[in-house]
Image (cartoon, rainbow, N blue to C red; front, side, top):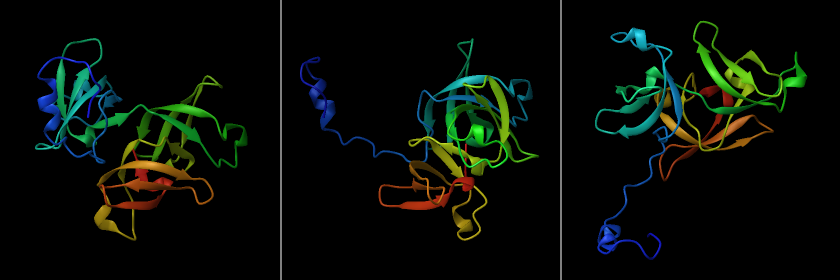
Length: 185
């Protein structure tokens, strides 16, 4: 369990079995922004940090930036501002291999706006050209071979460059391989 030392009595709680790891929950500390909120539409675009996932409601507690306020938010109303790597762009090969941060998602164009640090500019890219980091929790989308998996969340274990696919962990027992464009944050 834990390391030695610590407070007396702390050892007792270590005996309780830990909650099994979740592969479908965005980890605490992830920076997100709010999108698609109807009742609190003035909050759309606000940034915050994931504090915790509430399995019973399927919502996240988000602490909003520049305030002490927290909100309970559905995962569909969050965009994760995570680091990505750009891959396989034929028209602008100088972008390939560069890293950037997701700024927004344009649902009409089905593209991410990504800020590329090295170039100090924002580029608009399809999900198939954006490689999410291992450990990212993303949602399965647009899968025609196994439509029952669409909408489920899983943890990206690794990226297989040759086929441009991820190994995605859905549960302790289940890892599946999916095309990069089928995982969205």
